[in-house]
Length: 364
View 1 (cartoon, one colour):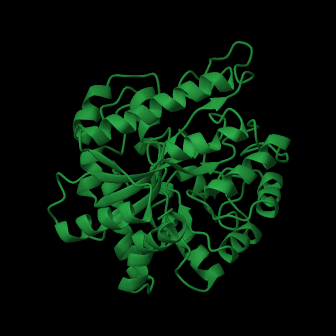
View 2: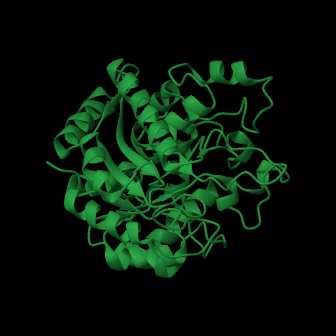
């Protein structure tokens, strides 16, 4: 099997918000949740650390995910206790707790933080030399923040950098303290512009995933550092502001970015309605469609990759047909090969493009 770098998995959020032990086999996790009814993905999770090893997911971008949104609870509605907080102070504290979860897993040898080029190369050599004997290897992770609300003010960026943070997206859904994200429209805030300046100073990677169109174009104008789209599909194939237009994708490609294809069905099938459409309306070939579209725009295979977003608030209730666990990402090899992609091309898409990107942009 080909080793994979998955550029977006919400591990700490899944573990702490859904009370999951990610060190357990996935079947154990599913059995424990089978009778739970508080969320549609209960008993249908797709990710655990043993399952990642089984699928040769050697490394991922592991997120800190929490939003400061006082206004999210509508009259008669329910507070999203697992994601939304009343203030940035709350968001900051919860993100630090999620970070501590990764520290705990690292201390136990389950995961390994990757902060520098040297740490990246050491980790990758170990996985390459292990062959199929990866059962006890730590899974490498680059710490990423999905939505910048936990950063209390731009001047706090160096503190987060010293804590190991290497990639940040400005917003998630709707407005953040710094920009506007999916489902809304609006510009960067004044603090958002300052935040980008701090990112440039320390070498932070800007993840433009979830940026509204206006915020996206402003960020590209204001920021001269490295950019990427960790988990983003193509608007030309699936309309909607959660996906990027060809113009946006070409701008990213021109800046040397890599774009990770997402495995959530509603981003793979036009007008998909979660919970109301059968899984077999969309299969894993749709993920390959997203990868192929990026390759066609670029004229090569150097900018396409996998950013699955698996267990990012959904499980097999919302994955394409044929994707039962993260292990099934390996099926993309034969799908891409069937479309004429060479072995070298598939290696690049599975891990090589992200390796090259982070070797360029992580500190020495």
